[in-house]
Image: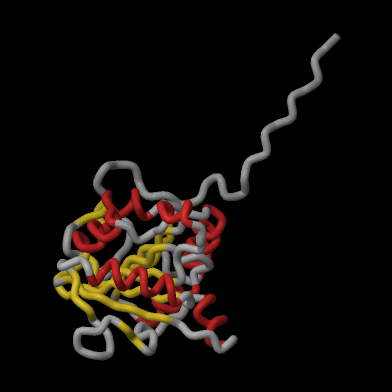
Length: 212
């Protein structure tokens, strides 16, 4: 008796999501063009990076999105809109991608928008902004380069602010001297969640630090 035919394995539509080139060291200039570089950690559906591509035409923009679906969709949309030479999104975990990037002191802005949607204590180890991220952000930022974070969860904002304020490599860069807090987003671009929060009348907590 013949064995039943094995059904072909169905491939994910995002199996070929964009990833960084192979190699231990990747120069930013080899993946995007720009007079300077900016990195977005977790671009999600891509609202910020699309608008940033318009508001900062001289910047080379790189996003790292861990979800293959959204990395693929956003990167393809950037290409369709003519931004592929200077704006890319890769399906990568920033914790592992950032250490591979160079050159040092070449990034003018690093952003994170509404990160870390985990609340239980056992998930604390999954938080994006840990020591590894801060070490790499510091290494990559130019002198006085900025690290901008926003969230609609006050507890998270306080947590991020406390972490950065304890790091002597960064100084507050907010609206007031010695304060990291910003009332508005100063970058001419918004993420979809930021727009929803504004529409719903939710407070948004924004902090910014710069490299010493």
